[in-house]
Structures are given as structure tokens and as C-alpha cells.
Image (cartoon, rainbow, N blue to C red; front, side, top):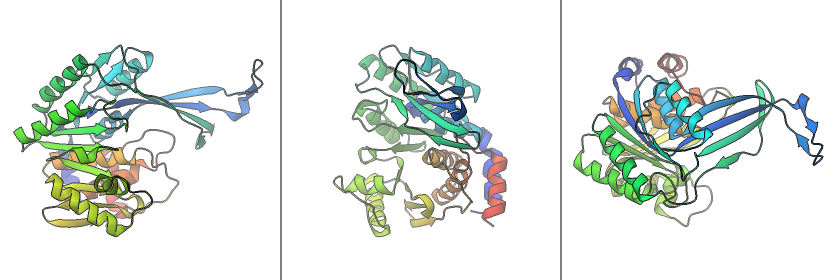
Length: 340
């Protein structure tokens, strides 16, 4: 990827129209000041004092936030509960300029929420045990039908459809069997549409769409019983097999080792951008997803898409204690400073 390519993509980013469908979550950061700790009169345990909150779109919402940071136009298709977290999530999405008109409110489900207590002082926080709210039962059929209908309406007006399957419980998230089958059918109907799927546990069930997974997930997609740390040869072998099965480009992220792309031109190793720490890798995969999909939506090659994704990830991992994103100006500067 050249500097001119980066500048060209960033100059055209605001014209890209992307629909994000999947598990939208609320990232709720609670900032705790240790100097204010006090014992609970009732239990004797320490009562932490929250002096501030940070409310950000998480899960599929984090991908939407990253895309909006890059100035792309974003439509959101997902579920919120009839609860305060749902209100905060919609407000957080709308504050970044995402279109939430196709989000579905379901009074029978809670809004998926990651509550992250941050203990310390600004610039020196330690994350305590996280408190998660998520759903452990399937969507009702009428909600499922609304999700599929809204996804198809938005996809017809978009350059790309980004599918994010956040949870590992079968058929308990937004991307259940019926929604996944609708995505695959759409890919067959509209091969010109960029359709991208990212799934922690079920990437092997997608076909004929662009997919992304990490080095662990790509091996598990081929060998479901695998345990341990996959080496480079295993990632190469399983990535090649997943590409042969999927018939669309496969992106595999590998942390500090960068990423690999499997496509019709062979295998490409995209190096990580070597930037100084400290790091917060939470959300790095979402940052990669935004870069890949934006680049592909603008007509870039899979190899340039992987390079752009690594640049964007290198920016977001340096943002500690928040759900971060990169701007076009930051992307260009990062390339000039570390990639030339």
C-alpha cells in the first residue's frame, strides 16, 4: 500500500455506505477513585466510589463507531432492549452520526452490555472484573423477521454489508441460523455487494462472503477440537482450506504478527505497524473490520484492505480506557510516520 493509496481512500471514505448488522452492545466504563474507597456499613466490604462514566457503542456498535470515525455513512441493524442501557446505546450511536432507524426494540431481551469498572486515576487505570449482560435464549420469530427485513432494505442502499456475530452461544445472538442463511442468500443474489462476516464461534458456517477471524478462530474453523497455540504453518494450512471452502477472501489477524490474506492471488502477509505501548487490544478486531470493509467498499484490493486495517488497529490500541477509533488524518499521519 502506498501513501497515495491511503490518501485516496481517506479522501473518498465519506462517500462509502455501510450497513452493520449484528450484536450491538453498550460499553459502560465506570471510573473509580481509590482515594474514595470506603467500607460498606452493611457488609464490611469495600464500596467503590464511581466518579464518572464512559458510555460507548460496543460489539457491532464499536465497528460502527470505527467506521464513523473514518467518516463512512453507517446504518445499524440490531436489537436493543426496552431498558436504560438500550436508551444509552441508541444515544451513543446517534451521537457519532450512525443511522439507528432500523434498530429493533425488543422488550423481551436485555440490551447487551459490558460493564467495565476502571480502578485508578486518569492515565493509570486498571480494569477490574467485568460485569456482562447478554441473552441466553433465541430471538422471538417476529423479531428475527424484522431483523432480516431491515437488513435487506439497508443492504439495497449500501456499498457493503458488515455482519458481526459477537456471542458464542448458538442462536442466542442476532446472527442466528435464519439471519445467517439470509446473509448467504443475499450474497448469491448480489455478488457485486461487499458482504463481510466476523464471527467468534461460527465463521465456518458462512459461505460465499468475505470472512475475518483470528489465528485461533481460523484453526478452530477447520479443526473444532483443536486446543492450544497455533503456529504459522497451521494458520497457513487452515486459512487456505477456509478460503477454498468459502470462495471469497479470508482475512486472518495475528496480533503483533500482523495479518494474512487468502484470495485468488495466493497468500499475503500484511505486517503489523510497530508502535510503542502501552496497549489496550480490546476492540482491535473491530478496528480491523472497519478498515477492511471500508477499503473493499471503495474498491481497494484485499491486500490494501489488510494493510489499512493494520494501520487503523495500531491507532486504536494506543487509546487506553475508552472504546477508541481512528480518523482519516490520523491514518495518513500514522502511515507517514511508521510505514514509509
